[in-house]
Image 1 (cartoon, rainbow, N blue to C red):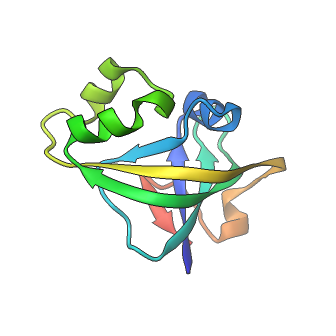
Image 2 (spheres, rainbow, N blue to C red):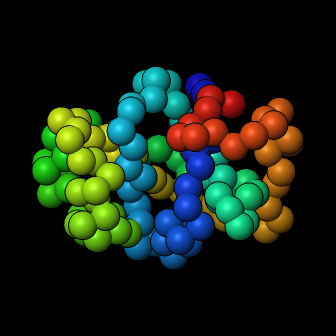
Image 3 (cartoon, one colour):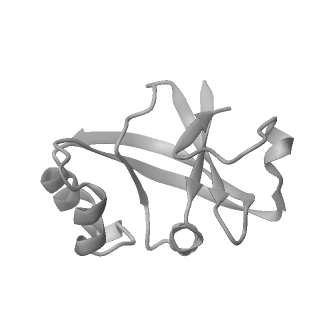
Length: 122
């Protein structure tokens, strides 16, 4: 199994940790063999702050994905529509076993120099 490190806005990271966001949305699907995501909180935090197992990966039209995930999206419909504007496919990672690190880690501890635009395999 492989992991991927994902860059996420601090507001969304907080929603993942407080349980209101159980899905992480992306425009591109990762490889099938991903076991968990490593959560990198973008500026101003700029640290690896936690991890979550991927329970399942949903791929469908943005409308279908929203219908299935909206209760625990952690975002509003307007933000969702902007993110998937002009897209025919949406990807939602269903997160489980979410862990917040007691001490955030540097990217360098994963052998990474700069934060990925979207995600990177580690």
